[in-house]
Image 1 (cartoon, rainbow, N blue to C red):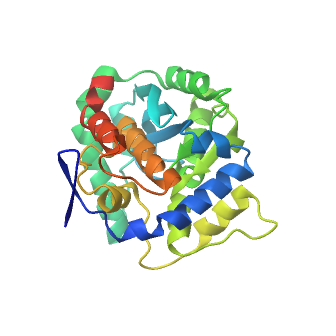
Image 2: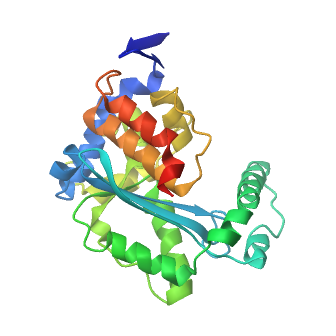
Length: 278
């Protein structure tokens, strides 16, 4: 089935759309608990994303960092840095046996992705210390919520380990402003309700620990379910992922997206032309 509006034809969203009110409730509870609800409802927020050679904080490294800030749900400014890594670092990240077939398939997927972008890493890569400094300046003093998809349990720990290895310290910014959108999407589908004395971060941690079969919350799943017409072939580029999460946050925070109201058209145009931002 398709929806027609403003001369455009859009595919109807998937079943996840029925959970948007509960996802919105968890997202706003988290923002309100951090004193950031007014910012989020007004569409004033930042997004952070990393691309890495894998998920092992000790062995793997960061090769791309991106941030985007939004005002009124529209792109305000952005940071996009490719990190210079050596061929040895790249190959070391994939050394050693992997006995779990699923993890091995994932590792091969990441290997192929980084290998495809190796020319870009060589041509555009900046020293890690320089990138860490840029990121600190971008985020330090940011008064807005800082959103990341699974940020509390992947991006931030990975970022901290990477920066610690480089500079001997973490990237400095106000961690209390972090909102993990992955937890809201997961929790909204299983009807998690905040406990009376629970903090926003406690709720995020509780949702993270839940193991529920058949519940998905990846960025790819969000694209497939909320915006079926979006070409997500550039996913796993940190800047593209930041822009996608900006779009998904618009949908989740408002609880809807009406084709023809200009919002869908804005985001689709931005994502279609994202490479012009680099």
